[in-house]
Image 1: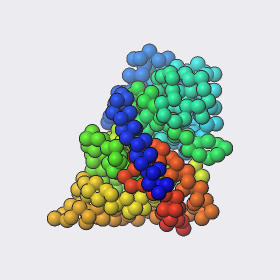
Image 2: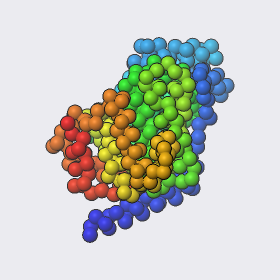
Image 3: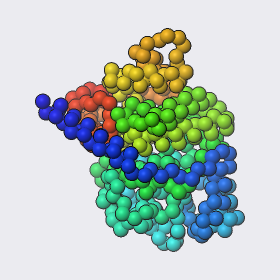
Image 4: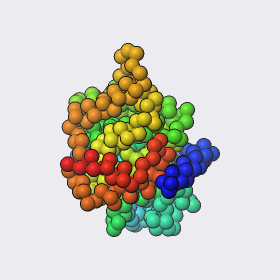
Length: 402
C-alpha cells in the first residue's frame, strides 16, 4: 500500500502547483515576430537606454556569422556589447559563473541571449546571479529569486525549447551531473524575437530534434492533469503548426514560412508548459542529458513514444484530440483508434527524421539510478496523468537500450 499512499501525496503536490500557477502572475515577453524581427528588437533595446550588453551565445553561431547583423544593428543604435560564447549544450554552473565574471568585468547592464535553449537558460541564470547574492544551488527550485534579474532579452535560433517564454532555467551540476532547474516568473525575458530568418541555416538533424522537443512540450502540457483552457489552446495550436511545418522545415531549411511557423509553435508550446508543466518524458530525458550529454531534443524524441504507450489508457481522449489537431482523423475512427494513430505518427516521424528509437550510450547498470532520479524529479514537480514506480520506470527505460 506504500506506493498508492505516495501517489496521493504526489497528486496533492500537483494540485498545489495548479493553484500556484493560477494565482501567480506569469509574465510574457514583449514579442517581435517575423523576418528581421531580431533587428527590430535591437532598436527597442537601445530605446530603453541600455548602453552595454553581455551577449551570451555559443562559438558555432559566432563562427558562422549569425550574430553579425545583430551586432551591427546594436552598434548603429549606440549599444556597446561584449560577447561570451562559451556556452555548450546542457550548460553547467561553471559556464554560467564564468559568464557572470565577464558581465561584471565589463560593467554590462543587461543580457542578450542568442541561440538555442542552452544559451537562453544560461543567460537567465547569469542575469539572476548578477542581482541575487547566492550560489546557483541556492536558486534552484521553485521561486527562490528575491530580486529581479538584470534586464534580459532573447533571440532563439532553434524552434524547440520555448525557453524565450518560460519561467525555467535548467543547468547541470558539473560534479553530480544532475539537472537543477531554477523556476521563477522573474526569469521570463523582457523581450523576445522570433526571427525565422535566423533559423534557415540550421542542419536538418537539429531542426528535427528541436522540433520534436517543441512537440513534446505541446503533448506533455496537453496531457497534464494541470492543463487549463488556455494551455490546451496553446498546446493544440502548437501541435497543429508542428505537424504542418516540421517536415517541410527539415527537408527545405530555407523555407522561411515553415521556419517562422515552427518558431511560433515553439513559443506556443512554451506558453502551454509554463503553466501546465511537463511529465515523465522530460524527467527521463533530463537524466539522459545529464549523464550522457544527450541533446535534449534527441532525448525527448527517444523517450516520448514509450511514455505515451505507458500512459495511453489514462489519456486516450487527450491523444485523440491531438490526433485531430494533427490532421489524422479521416473518418469515424474511435478515440482509441485516433490515440493509436497519433502515437504511430510520432514513431513514423522519428524514422523519417533519422532519429534513433534507442539510445546507444544507455548502459544497463545506469538504469536504476536514472529511474530513481527521474521519478524524484517527476513526482515532486510534474502533474503526470499516470504514475509509475521504480520497477515500472526501469522496465520502460530498458526498452530504449540498444
